[in-house]
Image (cartoon, rainbow, N blue to C red):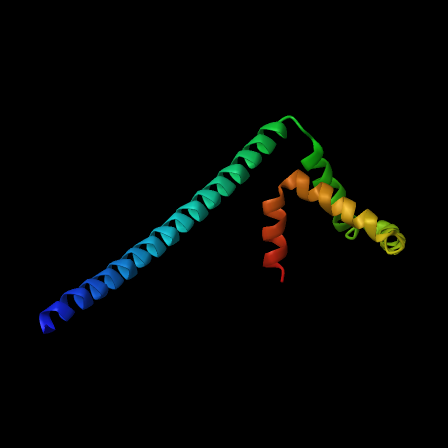
Length: 128
């Protein structure tokens, strides 16, 4: 009689262990699938950024906008060393203090687009 009870109990225990093992395998497979999907997204994102930068670099090969911004941004620095121009620089910065915020945001966006957004963000991170 004892053996007639042990058989069904063993089957129940075996079924429970089998179900638990299958659930763990399914969970592990789900985690692996999620990790693979995240890796593909990261690779795709990095590839898109690299492609965008390549296109922008090719487009700016015949452009003067980078040089224009360098010249404009360098003028106050150069004029500060010329005694007769010191007043011009000071008055210019006083006038810029009156400019609206949207002007500086627009200028910042234009310069970032010219030199590359990644370069601008790296510059700002370095200055913190």
